[in-house]
Structure formats: C-alpha cells, structure tokens
Length: 138
Ligand code: HEM
Image (cartoon, rainbow, N blue to C red; front, side, top):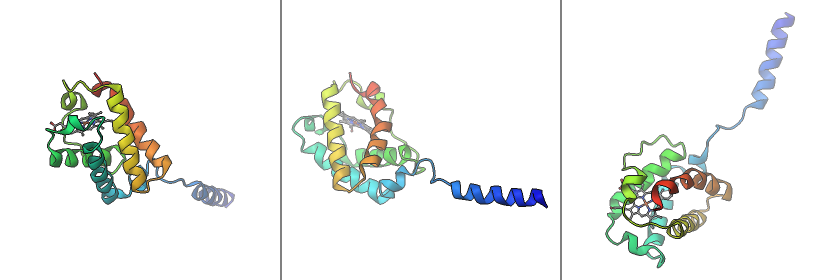
C-alpha cells in the first residue's frame, strides 16, 4: 500500500514537472503559414537590398522560396524534409563575403520582426542557420 501511495505521489510530482516540447520553434515561428509569410517577406527584402540584391538577379524565386520554406520548417522541428542542394553546392562560386552574409541575416531578422516573431524565437532560428556560414562564405 505504501508503495502504491509513493508511486502515485511520484506520478503527481512528475506531471507537475512536465515541460514544453524541447523544440517548439516551429510553432513559435507561426507554423507552416508563419514560415511561408517570413520567407515571402524575406525574399522581397533580399531583392530590394542594395547590399546584396545583385546576387539574386538570376536566381529562380519559386525554387528559392520552396527550398527556404522546407529548410526553415526542417530546422525548426516542423518535420519537413529539406530537398534542396547542400549549402556548399548552392552557394559555390558566388563569392559571398561575411558582410553579405550579415546583410542577409539582417534582412531575415527584419522579416521575422515584421511577422511578429518573438526575439527568442528569432535567435533560436538564427542559431541554427549561423553555422552554415562555413559552407556559404568564401
Ligand atoms: C544562413 C544563410 C543562408 C541560408 C540558410 C541560405 C539558404 C539557401 C537555400 C535553401 C537555397 C536554395 C538551394 C537550392 O536551390 O537547392 C539558397 C540558394 C541561394 N542563395 Fe542562399 N542561403 C544563405 C545565405 C546566402 C547569402 C549570404 C547569399 C548572397 C548574398 C545567398 C544567395 C543565394 C542565391 C543567389 C541562391 C540561389 C541560387 C540559384 O537559384 O541558382 N545565400 N540559399
């Protein structure tokens, strides 16, 4: 009997300790619709950013949108599969500098801001993308 009471007590205590899923970033970004809106806004900013828009002149906007949505969804734990090229292959030979990279990050932050994404969620997505600079910056 004492054992049953202890087990029950333990169960009650543990239920109080339940935490949110470890990575709820996908939800914090607004789910799939939120990510699509972020990417749409981001692409407009990239195309009109005089610091880096030249890089995107010959890009295929439809493909870029699709791959970025997949990538942000996958990276944020939304369960998508990223089917695009590797970061190394897709940016090879573009001569992307650290300054270009930082400009793109600024545009992404502005897009997330415009979609009312919390600063904490912004930082969590950036933390996942930042290490990619090794494969993108030449
Ligand atoms: C964390 C930073 C970045 C991420 C996560 C990222 C992500 C991506 C993704 C997912 C694609 C699509 C790959 C595919 O088509 O399979 C792509 C393509 C591209 N990225 Fe980035 N990128 C980043 C930084 C940059 C920077 C700094 C530039 C230039 C300033 C840039 C320029 C491009 C261009 C021009 C394409 C299109 C290539 C094409 O359509 O032929 N990217 N990027």
